[in-house]
Length: 327
Ligand code: ADE
Ligand code: ZN
Image 1: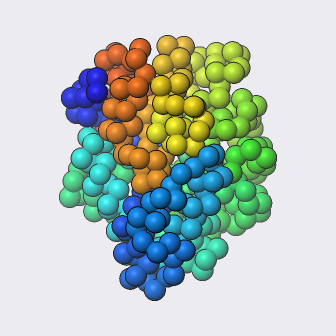
Image 2: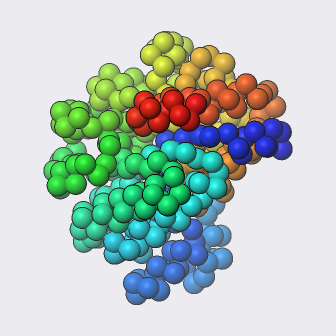
């Protein structure tokens, strides 16, 4: 590994991780047992062997099945505390965690169960470990906009427990503009706005995330390199891209990690960041994403490492005083 000490020790923010994607196979089995949920896999090893993905959808099918073991407030709390422990170990000073309420409310789990469990974990980790943690509610884009609107209304009693909304799940065929009304409503509520765009989908989806939804950051965004005008726009407006190297490798967005375009993004002046996306499924948490990326992409330097860490804190939704303290 090149620059391992620097990569591990530098203070950083994680801006793109799905808390349900931090469920390790061992915890899936422990929660299945605790809750009497039947799994389609006989053992931890058999489940882990199923983690061989060809594209985003092949991953999502297994990811939603894994989340089916989450039933009680304690389950959500335990999952989030386990992730935040790993984040602290990687010198993550700020974590903005996505959660997918529809994955749970569709199974009969109450919104209060999901949000209160996750929120309590954030509060306790902040108090006991000093990490700053916040929640971003994501809408599932394979479902209709009406379901997203209902989900936002259902979450309003807990408005002070999340800082923004995002858009995730199956990208191609579900462009951002499908969710124009629910993002307008979220904006009126004073929520931060982000969306997955340009992971597998075309540059046009990044344009409409910016210009129709009005998002402040683009999750993934690596397909922007196919549109020079879009690259100019992202650089000029310092729109952060929350890039996920190991996710892109595992979901075959790039043939190998060595083919990743993050250096091109950085050298074009874009505010790229490094994130783990679904660390339990893609082979590693924050520092593994950094160290494997710098191992594999030969042109990356210490300057790039500093830039990535700086960008992550700058693009976070933390208070200005906190950002100054971390930089
Ligand atoms: N949900 C969890 N991980 C995701 C990803 N990488 N893209 C879209 N939806 C997701
Ligand atoms: Zn994601």
